[in-house]
Length: 321
Image (cartoon, rainbow, N blue to C red; front, top):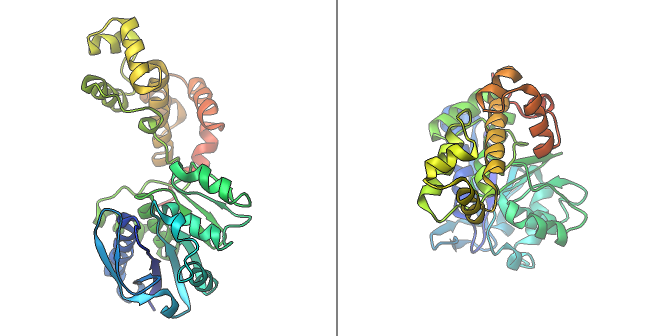
């Protein structure tokens, strides 16, 4: 029997929060047939619902008319979700439907609606990093972790922003059908599967401002693509056509991070990805990411993620066969 997935939208929702998960479940159904999913889109009121950006989607069912039980209830995000929290055609019905669902999920700022219903009280959750502080302040009884791509706490799943809804949905498919199907779905959608839920939604570019100067943007891309190269300040300054001092000053002004710190974080991110997706020994990872020795790798991980490389691998390495 196919699992019923109900995705809740409202005026101003984020279109990819709906489209990404919907395509994951639909692709899984194409690959499994009768053992897949049926996706239903519901809104406070049936009819046309306009996403942020102006695209209109038709919700054929009002929330009040959604039948139960439900396998998976998913709340999408949107920049204006706070203005909908008091909607009598939204929040009370989400509460009702959640009580009749095997699992309850949210994408991006959809976590605000789950928190408003009390479904996240005493639970750990995540959301888009831009609104994590706002969620934590508004709902002090909710443990908000702004770092992971998605979080599972009991039967409740929450995800980070926008494309993280695809990661969340792939994880749900993997839980239902195994990693092999999730991998096949990811391959069909041409998306990257190796993103465990605990992986940070932050990467080096998010920790640094994109510089307005094109040659510095190109230099950032070079650093990220070549972690084992000579990335010393003199070498980078020569690539940028500047003196060492002038380069350090301009890079820091335009990115908000000194070049040495950017290089270290970029190398740490490269090592983190290898720990998640390979079985390479730590000396190999340290060497190929430009960190040199396992001792340096250990110190960098302690500084940036307050854990050891070995512990990180045990927690977040992909478990697919």
